[in-house]
Length: 179
Image 1: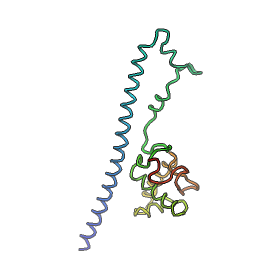
Image 2: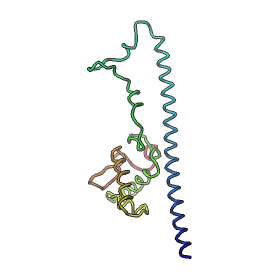
Image 3: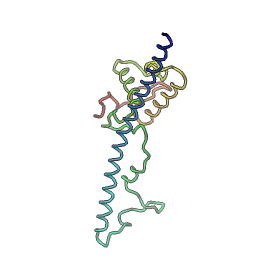
Image 4: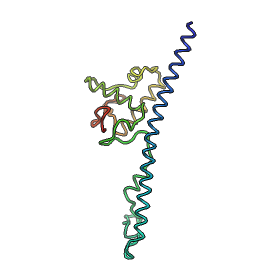
C-alpha cells in the first residue's frame, strides 16, 4: 500500500510539472502569436512605404530619405532598429505592459513578491521562494529561480536592493498592472 501511495505521489508531481510546463508554453504561444501579427503589420507598412517611394517626385531619391552619419553609413529608421532587436522571454518593463506578457513561472515570482509587499514584508531570497513554491530547496532549483529573478531585475520587473534579495520594481504594482 505504501509503495502505491509513493507512486501516486510521484505521478501527481509529474502531472503538476507537466501542467506548469503547458501553462508556460501556452503563455509563450500567446506572445509569439502577438509578435507574428506585429511583424505582419510591419511588413505591410514597409511595403506601403516602399510603394509610395516609387511615386515620389524625381528630385527626391533614397539619399534624401536617409541621412549619412559621421562614419558615412546611412542612418536607419528607428522602427528598423526596433525590429532588429532579438526577442527575449522576458520583455522589458514599460508602462502599460501587463504581467500576462510573462510566462507562468515569472508571474508566480512576481505574485509572491507582490504578496510580500502587500503584507509589508521585506525582500525575498531564492531559497525562500523555492520553499514558498513547494520546491525542493536544492542548489539546482534555487539557481534556476535566481536566474529567473536576475532576468526580471535586468528587464525592470524586479529590484535587488541587496545581493540575492528581491522585491518588486518601483513602478510594478500588482497582477493587473498595466492592464
